[in-house]
Image 1 (cartoon, rainbow, N blue to C red):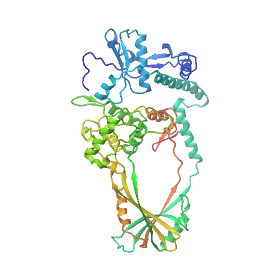
Image 2 (image 1 turned 120 degrees about the horizontal axis):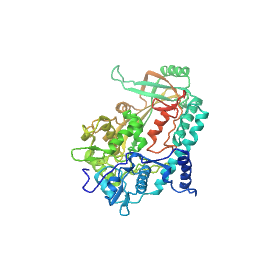
Image 3 (image 1 turned 90 degrees about the vertical axis):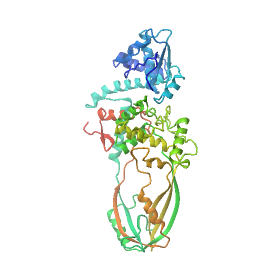
Image 4 (image 1 turned 120 degrees about the vertical axis):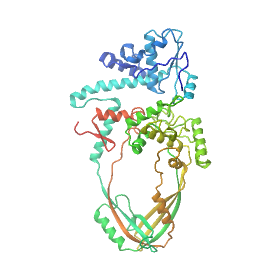
Length: 519
């Protein structure tokens, strides 16, 4: 964005500006009053100055203000914490008698660090939103009430327990409940029987191999737990080898797979873990670097929008630009007929910010090779592809299911396969020119080969079992998720896991948090 023009001074707050004091009088009682005032109980109004401890960076703007500035523009993050920092700065400067009567204080917000976004924000100044500030104060006060109120009790009653917290304790309770479910869960064993069939025209090297799974036995439909012992599975195997089979039915259908929603904080963390093997904290660290941007030969610019969000929506202007690029790169038929709108149905969703997307969709990942480190480029590529995909057409797949039955009619196997008829949004994941790395398409190539084999069959064709595969499985308890239960906010998911591992008795096992039995 270049160097600030003459007459414009920029100062940073260097992190936390003020914190509620931890002492009983300055913190605990005051915290209770803050909570009461924020929920409408007439005890005290906003906290007094003595309730706060001022950070070292709080006076960073005095140089620009004392007798110099006419306007103070507070441009912190567009969330509750950013609003609170703006309020803190204004309060401190007033207490320091730095803000004169001629200084105009304005709050501006932007969701991406680009020149246009900042200029638009400066054209739309507003007052500090005290509803957001009160929400922040209430949350911080609850943190202190619960943390300072419960932690000493835990130290006395549960030696080794280091601390309690508003979110930490709720999250740990979920982990403990999850562990209790695992201990009580009746893990059941079951078996599946898969069979490879060959057609009657098969030669030793060119036969059609039909992979299938038994679905009906003794004229009854099987469910997941129907075959619950190895002995039963072996008995079925013997019957298969001693029976004659033929194709009893062929069913064809079409399936549409809708494009994925754009990223929010939690889904970005999940996808980065699955595809890039980043933990949540590292994902947010890399994403923050992308949000802050990089310095090119011309100017510094942010690469992605604000990273702490639970909103799926994308601005109309950005969506139209995405559609334009989709048409340009892949053709008209790959672009959605209109702007796809995404919303979330969960009650506690705020959706104050856009989904996570590139600030300029035409900045291809391949253009950033050499400008970004490897991990930053990988995460940017993930975001770019997801953003493109969300405004593209659904993929269309041809499906085929072949039923194979024995001559007695009491055993039926299903063999199914799919073939991608129209790539739709999956085209972006195969676009190697746009990005230095690619991820596999949703449809496996092996399934497409099987589709061709199944398409050659007709009802009454004889088939012969050549291999029977018996596999043992165990049922698993369902997982619990913080986001679905409304615990935490997008900005806290990564820190919750970090705090649980450090203080709360949690341990990471195979990517999931479990109770540390030794603590």
